[in-house]
Length: 283
Image (cartoon, rainbow, N blue to C red):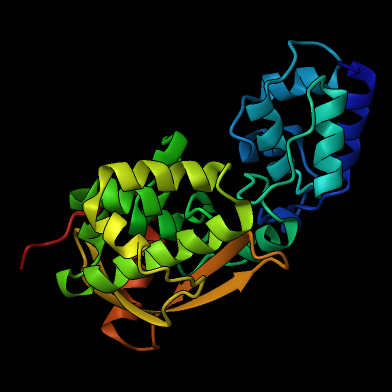
């Protein structure tokens, strides 16, 4: 671990970002060049004291999970992320499909989408990050690990929970879309990959998945239009827009509703309340 190089790099990247770059409002009396330490810590979901010790060349060696969080918070490119890992005494992560390192360009767009649900997904259907409105609509999956992080995996292994967000008459179409998306990732990543391991496990655990897998459907398209079910607000009719990275390993999914509709009003309510528990008058 090269403490001097690590500290210098963190300070440089922090000073090179402005609050608007990461979706933080700029105060009138702001004097700091770049981001404050506490802002980086908040973005990386770590304590300010822990982050401060890294910049002050003290404290323990950061874990790979901490480094990945810092790479996202500081909007590092893939080369910068690799450098961060190496000066912290770790091997750089493999640059493979379904990496947890989020493309900075997608993050910059997501930071500016505060009025409608938006989330960034990996090729395996893992939610890499989402705004508060999306979290209120879909729930928070940040605590999940392993294959459970994948919505594709959960769709077939935990159907009662995962499918509750979709009308029953749309489940068959969604199942086909999930399998087609996984086959597209499998074709790129290969049999000896995370995609291959997921296919093997789903073939073992779900007869529905096995039957659909044999149809050899391949697609990365998201439906243009769908109905989602919120536990308190009910049905919300939305349009979907997908923005892929150049290598198509990650996608920014944005959900919008037609202006002046009931769905638009529900999304506005979600945006105002965020992840707070909604308490609606049953009338």
